[in-house]
Structure formats: C-alpha cells, structure tokens
Image: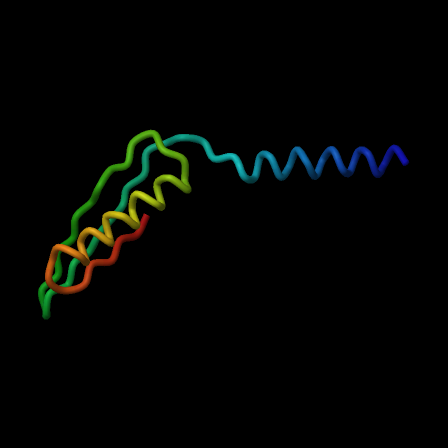
Length: 76
C-alpha cells in the first residue's frame, strides 16, 4: 500500500515537472521563398515558455503568409 502511494506521488511530481516549462529566450527562424529566391529572418522571443514561444512563432508564419508573396515557414 505504501508503494502505491509512493508511486502515485512520484508520478504526480514527474508530470508536474514535465509540463512546466521555464521561461527563457527563443529564436524563431522564418524563411520566405518567392520563386527561386529565399530570405531568412530571425525573431527573438524573450522570456517566454515553450508553448507561448511556439504560438508566437506560428503567428509570425501566419503573418508572413498573409502579407508577403510566396511561402513563409517558421521554426522555433
């Protein structure tokens, strides 16, 4: 019975650590291709968690595809 409680507590702690991201700086690299010409731009996302940084990077991609000719892809 004590083992089950210990295992449950350990799994709960491990899952809390796994889903908590620390805030740090991320670089979102966006490449726009128009015909045979490509252009790369790096956006710095300051003090963000991983999920928030991915969302912001995706917004750069959406903005590039909506406003620029060609295709824009962004990677964190």
